[in-house]
Amino acid sequence: MIGWLTAAVIILLAALILWGLPRLAAGRKVAAQSGELTEALVVLSRSLGLERCDRRTVFGDIVHRLRGEFNRLRVDMEVQVGRSCSFTRITIDFPQPLDQELTILSDRKPAVRNWLLRQKEVELGVEEFDRDFILLARHERRLEAILSPAIRFQLRRLMDKVDKLEVGDHALHVMVLEMTEPDAVSALLKKALETAERIYSTAVQLGPSPSKVEASVYSQAAADIYSREEEPVSGEPSSSSSSTASGETSSGSRSPA
Image 1 (spheres, rainbow, N blue to C red):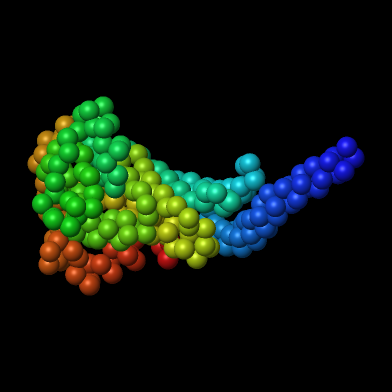
Image 2 (cartoon, helix red, strand yellow; image 1 turned 120 degrees about the vertical axis):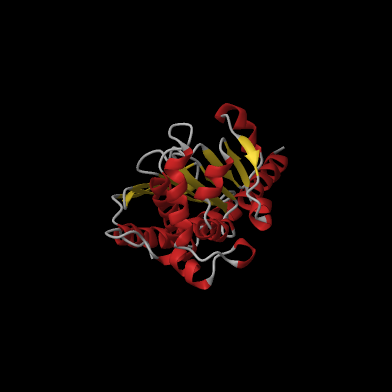
């Protein structure tokens, strides 16, 4: 009887060791990755002037959060380093609603909401862009006006780096799975800020959507925006406009680069 009991205890201990060792190793790896990320995010928050940088543990996973304002854009970035699931999620809220009544999506699943938004799915007429994005809008002309070549270029560059992208009247959202490498996270936030800043600036120039004002109010603004950008071949910006898209900001604003 004692022999059977001893054998059962040994088997149980062996099972616990076999179960626990991989989890212990994974926990150490998560802690090491999280330590490197913490240092990088502190540097990033200081360089961008963001107010809050903190971390917490949730069921063994470590969640980092970076919040604050950059050029009036409200930033909320969450990076989860976990044993089973790691991701980076960024939300950039515009200083005020864009009032464009359009939504840009990289995933068809949210498109079922278009009846709530009173929007219809439309195409821009640029083959590569229409293939990569779902566009919902109440006014097709407004969509064509705000999606200038430079903005299309920036959206496609951002989309190349993420698993999910959404732009609406209130915010820009991106999410990418399995991204916790500090340099990649920093580069993604800066690219998202550049894109959000250009979209907001263009929307301000265009003014509210034509359901609130006459179309003639924004038609000249749209023409002015396009006149400052060289129309690219196949709907993509030339080298000069792409450099503008990736680097320049309005006067008095800071660049995330």
